[in-house]
Image (cartoon, rainbow, N blue to C red; front, side, top):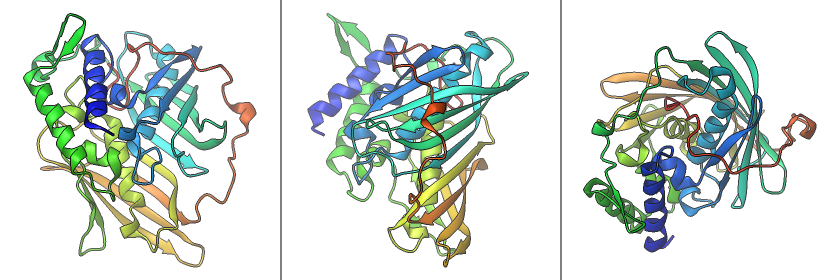
Length: 343
């Protein structure tokens, strides 16, 4: 990624937020989603370097953000357009490695509804039409009126001059920070994690793996909280980190995440800690658990995962006839958000 291309992508994302769009990362990744029918939605993300991991595949954070946003969009018709909601849980079953480049599509449909709660199921599909995963989400409608973004707590203060977006002082600092991160990119982390401000994971004396995320403007949503997709991506990556496992041929096959707190604010780093609870070497499987902390609070989110050697030696259990068949559409930017960001 050239510094010019990165700057152009960031400025375009800032401009989209300024024009009433979604959160900064949503636009930086180029995520698009919208309803395609009653209780159905489709979302897409095209490969950009900032959304890829060290192997050139879609990274966990943009993938889970795509899934969360699309699942949330599918239940919007049940909650109603003026009712805010949050994600309470996300579950993922992977049938194949995440795609390397191209386009990743999520097709979702509402499944169960009861009172202020709703659930949805979706499928991750690569640009060859192959289903690479199944995703499920649970959502809760919040009581009270929709909360307007608190602009006083956000330094998004750029202006448009002669049709060109002019960033604020804080946004200039963000551009400089991202350019510096990109220039110092570590091959082990990959471009996505590097630009997000992740530290290289390290193994603790206890055998656990710790992954740290620096906070700032890039990872926040319009209610000043850390985006749910960032939290999900951290825990996903911690569970599958090779430092926990014996060799590089282990892959994550199932992942379950529960949000236990309303969100994380700016302050100390977010810390994801993962450990192997049980390993069956002969069967080539391991059960992993992870938690998210932000001092002085612990357990903001909890995750469990099954990691297996040669994890993708099976085919999708979901038949293609069960997937929504509507053609993808270009979505509106004013749609329901993701975890802890359904504005």
